[in-house]
Amino acid sequence: MEDFKTLLPESNEKWEAQLRKGSLELAILAALWAGRLYGLEILRHLEESSELVVVEGTIYPLLNRLRSAGLVETEWVESDSGHPRKYYSLTAVGRRRAIEMSRTWARFSASLNNLLQPLNGDAGKEKP
Figure (spheres, rainbow, N blue to C red):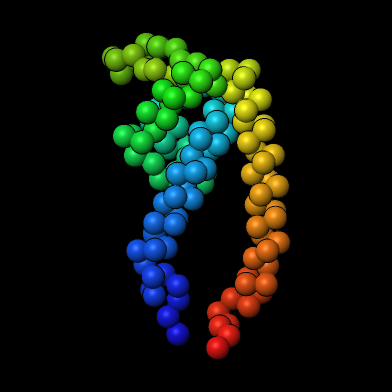
């Protein structure tokens, strides 16, 4: 029997893209939790830690929006490779926002996981 991705590939891909887009702000704040990173380090961290693949054209406008909102601050640092790099770090407000978002995510995902539990227990079994 075909799975959902096979039956509705476009619909599932769009849904997954929206899910990823909606969680990207939280993911960036979480990536910066341990300390400052420059843009490409953030991209690599997201991909390695969460399999969240983000392109540069998506992350930099979001980082600028987070900076404008006072959630992150930037600092230019000279690099060994010759050109300076713009590092991003959380502000105190950004740290509080990350905690709030993390708690909201935990409540939401636990609630949704509870709702989805019957589906996961019957994985691969479809009812007529």
